[in-house]
Length: 103
Image (cartoon, rainbow, N blue to C red; front, side, top):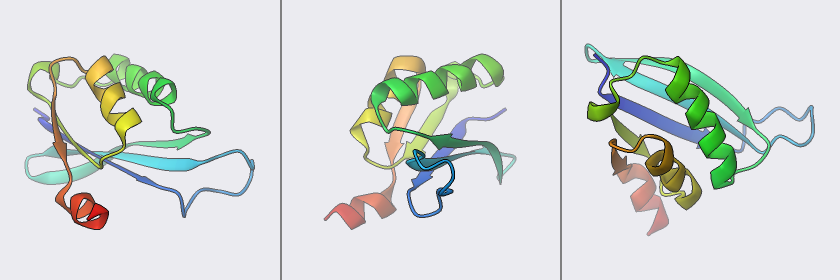
């Protein structure tokens, strides 16, 4: 079963058309020690509401064991709050790479 989900966002590789796209998110799961990309999302905003809507769709579609799932992500407050809102019993691990970039 999947127990770890990695989420990464970028602003540099967003398509220019349509012009209102702001970020590109990827979700990867670790299954049998192999990472698989499962979701690609182009977003128009980086608000907690936008992230919660996306996570709700993922929550409803994907068969993740919600009581044992951990998310690894950066330190974006809106996304962290959305994870806590949608995946109530999940663990949240902030990425060391992003931590060192903040310092």
